[in-house]
Length: 295
Ligand SMILES: Nc1ncnc2c1ncn2[C@@H]1O[C@H](COP(=O)(O)OP(=O)(O)OP(=O)(O)O)[C@@H](O)[C@H]1O
Image 1 (cartoon, rainbow, N blue to C red):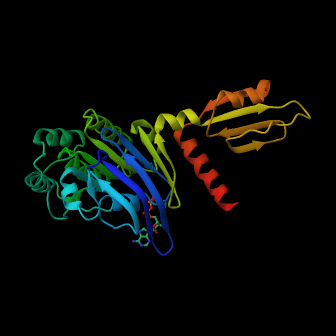
Image 2: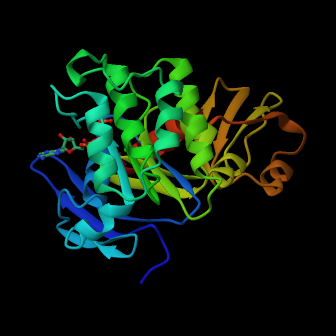
Image 3: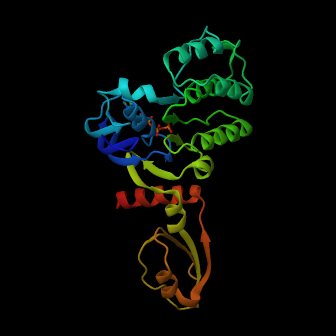
């Protein structure tokens, strides 16, 4: 029995034109992990395997202590899963969905469901086919959240939502995490959302995991260093520089392992040191790995 809510080790899945390679990460109780990657990076494939909807070619997946995909029926009693591809029954009302879900899952919380109806501005009488895209997403999220599952797995949960609904949803996620036995894995292109609520981040690109660590660790390690050299002077040999842009005199160095040693080596040439947003780190990380692979 493992304590992790999700544990992936060496997970590989090959399609005709794409391979997800050697994916390993852990999601601990009480954590929110943002799975970030460009289009086609393998986020949904990773999530689908974690949900037991697809078997890996190799590697180990355990979710809430259950081996996936074999023991998915047991694990899913305590997982709320929402993806953009999911469709509610077209002719049924939201109220019908709510009573169906509440009859299956003992954790259903009617008072919380009523609160979410108000927050998401939804009515139980609405049928699925009359819902807008954003309302459909909110309805699916309501059905997952009101079960109060131990693990929420959300594939692009904020796509198609307006900024106010996004804000409300992210606030809901933070509420979920007041309970340290619960956790969330969510995928997103929206690095602002990920930066706001995640405490762990996994970056994926072209089927590979570029890194998985605490958000604060990413934000602490990555820096842009602006350097201004006197004429004829040469930039000292530095390690851990992932990108270097220069017009001869002014240099912008991006480092993924910032420390005082680098500044000491550059001395008085350092003009400015800037923290990077998660979006800037994401782009720099992806470009650095792509260049390294192409060399
Ligand atoms: N069943 C499948 N058969 C063949 N190829 C597949 C299958 N499912 C996914 N792929 C391929 O795997 C790659 C990764 O897809 P995936 O949906 O996991 O990416 P993603 O990171 O979620 O992308 P996006 O952000 O665009 O939704 C894509 O190139 C896709 O074409």
